[in-house]
Image 1 (cartoon, rainbow, N blue to C red):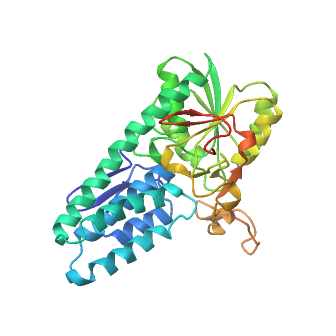
Image 2 (cartoon, rainbow, N blue to C red):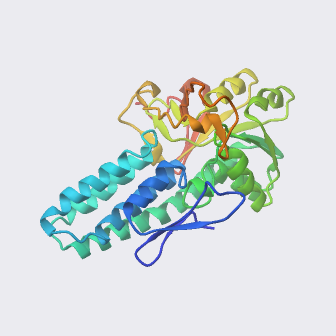
Image 3 (cartoon, rainbow, N blue to C red):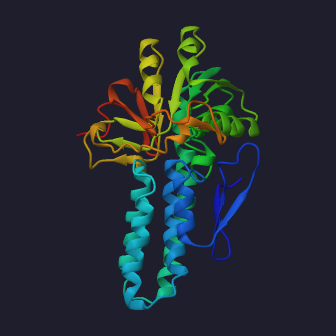
Length: 336
């Protein structure tokens, strides 16, 4: 089941806010609709956000009806719109930069040719991401023992990518080797991507999964019910510091205390070599009602003040290895 695809001059996305209750697709005929979908988490996951923005930029040019002389300013505006949607996910900016290269290279061509080339690039990125995830999975599964019991947080699966997944890609590849005996899925407050999406994905593939609240992870580790923690990433600094869904840092601390290996699975496009450490990663703070409400209903006093960072940063010292499509990277990670 694709989370995104191109169809007749429109981008069709799986509305992840409706899962698991309803499988519903949305047809986006304007790039503004795609940017909005990224912002409100109908599309989510760093690799998928990047490819979605690429499709959105192609769509913007294909649907452009203004004068040729105004095309660059129009494209710049569309680019800025997508860049503003999710500031932590570096794959977004990687994709925007790649699409900009195509646009600039064809600056003297007509609008139709530029639009077609941008669409070809977005579709190539879609296929590349699928192949990258399979490669990540194949490398990562070698780190897991037989009868592995693995814990993950958020959703780093097919729904967060163009298919197969990063952290869940490792789990899928290990399952194919008969290695997985149990996956523990943290529910992932405040918007429950683990409970809603990871559980749904794993059950679709008949991979054994148990759901726990985020606060139960320490108990599971203390009961010696766990062999590894595997998570995805939204941005990785050159030294290995990793931004991922809020709660990941706490899992890494717990895993270190219980001497359980902690792995990050992510494509090289998630590595930001322009920053030396996690201190330089921008952390998105989201709408406070994500914490105050659950499925539209208040679960606390409506007027309470809220702090709602979407991500935290796990220091590289707590990470045993980073699994990429190029292989398994260990400390000092990407620093020379």
